[in-house]
Image (cartoon, rainbow, N blue to C red; front, side, top):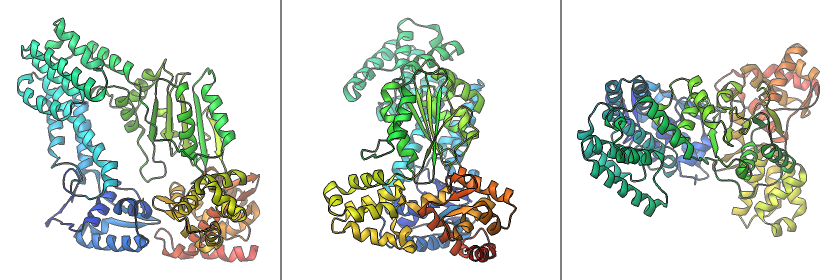
Length: 616
């Protein structure tokens, strides 16, 4: 089987090409392919298929689209699986053109680092040959294009630059001139193409033309972008002026290191997502982190912000990082580690992205994780930089990405507390206090509306259990529906059986956040999370848990501690564990409807149901 997005969407099996004529089914297939091997929540798919404006019938219609897509794909149809809360597609890396492109690119980079320019050029040509046009060109989804098309186009341009480097190393400067002129005209902002054009002209004996190109690019950058040429362009310009022998042939390692250092010294990244203008509460946590970020240190600050799904960990860290920008004038790096997915981000790939951001040419990025970590920490040494690592899976994923210089700091978010991350400062987020929850809702719905119904506002905050994600959904829904009273929404949430249905709005979905929260649990812990919610009280003691799970107390305690570490239970005192209200409602829902889920038979929950009745 072959699946392709580097151009029009394609699916090819032994019978030939499979056509997916329906536009929304193409969007659905593309959304699954770009996250192949991962469960994509139904809410995320609906947001993608309907470009952020899914209809009320989206869940039902989405199931219909999945059924029709399976039929259209023929023998590939069964590869689309249904998982709790979403869908996934089973596609191997060698079957997907975007992954083959990445693999060939990496082989080219490795060959170029070994000095095998001919082999590198061949691998780059293979990678570029996979492109049949702009990525996702026939997929009518602005959401998907914004997320994937630009990224893939950037990766293609990076490979073009690397292939041109290999060609210049092989002495093909004359035959590359036409292509370089087209690329500089099409992408005037990419200084690397201009530097390669100047080098090719100079090696062809056209020094005056090479200097004229520098004048042209300097004018374009000043007029269109308001910036001066970067370090690499200036270095090539100086080398041409003094007829530097190093410019006559393949770059020598010493010069390459000089250029890398020069480029790196001028790059000041700021990769944070936009901050929330309505961030509310968490005053003590914000002050604690701000104080630590601005204090003089003898070792790098590593802070781990943990808490239940939807607790606002990312919001707190991003708010704090924006506020700490002046304390880290050399830049802020950001990475989404995707810890809640089947395939979390690979630290090696994240390091590669960081190195490119810091100004390292693609061909100079080391192959191995350890080598990349060493170079990354060297580049950050002596600089006041902040690294934000969002949604970490575990300490093993985080460690290679941590800076080492005392002037550096790292803010990490994770559902797990990461207790084995040496030297980390723990920050655990519980529910918002009642006053902060009401204040948050007031900011979203407006002070006049909140003042008109103070009791209903308090009840709505209580129904949300102080969970920031739930509060935001309620506030946004009320703001979008001025005809609704606060009482109307509070009454809808008062019914536990429909509360979670009300807490979904586009990509904001409490169920989806909770579902992602249990993705990394082992089977016994996931089962215990469901079954212990059937106890008559939201607080479960160790003895009760032992009887309900049918396990010795020591085994039950280990399971409960795993749930507490994952932010799914709160350990208020030794031997007693509490469900937050919405998490308990969701766990009871899972236990009630467990037979419909694919990963375990219904019989698993029946003994615990009987034991819950006995305990009650």
